[in-house]
Each structure stands twice: as C-alpha cells, then as structure tokens.
Length: 109
Image (cartoon, rainbow, N blue to C red; front, top):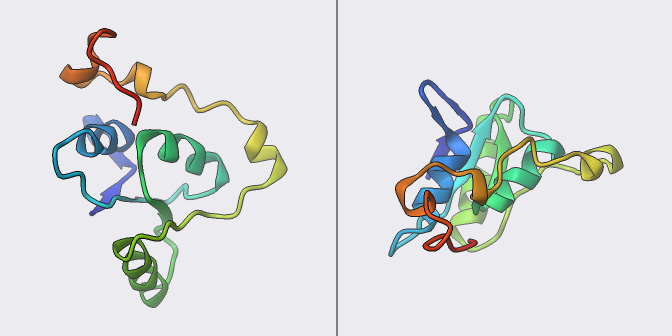
C-alpha cells in the first residue's frame, strides 16, 4: 500500500499503525515530500516497511514498491543529525485510533 504521509484530516503514520495492527497487515510504503531520515524513524515505529520521496522517479518508485512487496524494506539515508532527532511527537502511544486509546489494550507493533 502506498500511503501519503500528510493527509487532510488524518495522520498517515496513525493510519499505518492502525493498518499494521489488523489481522492481515499490508506492506506499507509511506509516500512523502518530506521523505528523509527524520521521517524514517517515526515511520518505522508506526510499522511502515519503507519511506519514498514524492520526488523519486517513477521507475525508482516502482522498484521500491517491488522490493517492499518481496519482503525487503526501503529507507532513505539517515544522517547522524536525523538519528538524534526526536520522533516528531508520534509514537504508538500517542496514536488516537480506538484500539490504542486504552493503554490496557495497546500493543507495540
């Protein structure tokens, strides 16, 4: 599944997290204009299988999707600075989906 990071009215990472908690979780590629190492960390926490930039040429996008469908992951390069960044405030604990709204029922993905 190709999932936009910034959706009107919802958070792409929260949607990813909800999808990955389902009985048949899909492979998820977060698609973003802001696809960099700083996004890779919260996307991984949300359960994404990769992050791809909207600037990626179509042939490379298809290759990334093919790799993810085949069980690989695709992540942008991580700079040392990105590794030190906080998770942009998003963690599974801050997810507002109904299964996660109770700490008693929350499971980490």
